[in-house]
Length: 66
Image (cartoon, rainbow, N blue to C red; front, side, top):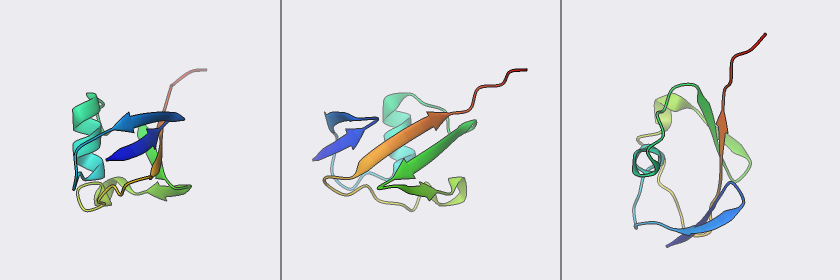
């Protein structure tokens, strides 16, 4: 199925959870925020949130600094 990840069209497998998507992309779940269709997905629900065709996913990495 086709989804948008950080503004780029990507093809991913069907019935993929947000957690599985991050694993496929090789991205650790900590120190990031995941937004799907302009709604923040809480880390506690990543394994339950199923990605749908056409979803717009934004992955926002937290970067420490001073």
